Length: 148
Image (tube, rainbow, N blue to C red):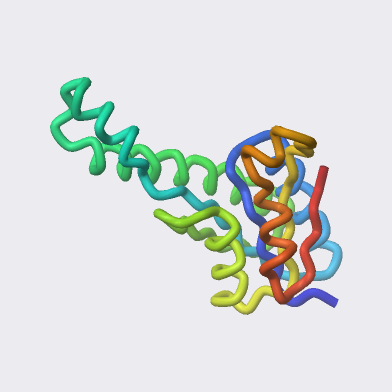
């Protein structure tokens, strides 16, 4: 069935459910997984606020902080796979829109399924914040399993 499953995680509760579900599915079909987390590019507004607050190098601090957070997120997800006996690799994609990083990683790693969580936002929140799950569904050439 599936030969390599990509599981997207951002450390949130919905993505933790996706990690659990994706790992269980991988175990059932005997597929390895790649855990991916994507951190967005720093914003000019946030960086100028950092400069005003006295930070010497706000971009470098943002990048270090994003890398630390991504490392913890991926380590936690990898522990779930390890406990289940599922082969797991991890990848942090920095400075990208999450949907782009997820789809690109699935293509690059030759994954045949993407598993991800959804916050389930509706109405104005979805319009203002966008829906990464919706964007992945639109852009992906492989099936996407969205866990609510």
